[in-house]
Length: 108
Image (cartoon, rainbow, N blue to C red; front, side, top):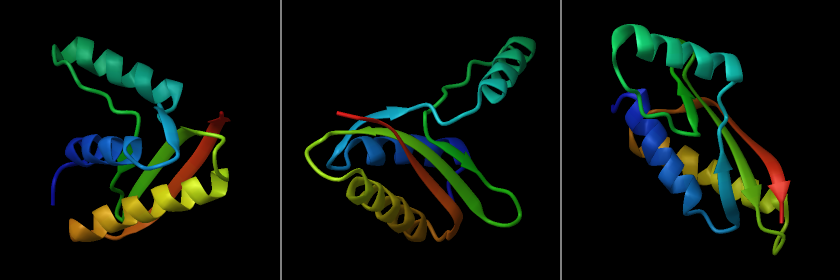
């Protein structure tokens, strides 16, 4: 199975291409992003951050997604479409998500 950064990149592209999704917002907490920047500075690395957050605790893969949707159709239908696409991707990778969270942050 790919690492979480690869999965996050793949899922970001997948969510962006899902019909009804207008934009993908950063789902990471501000504290988490600050911590990443500090680690990047201290280690000299430059991480590529994706708006889709993927974590793999012992309980299973957790995915957090924040999206903006068009007002052409219901937000709940778009959320279901995103959820189902993410679940299918993870299943294809041989993984089952313990949690897929899709939050609508804007409509229109």
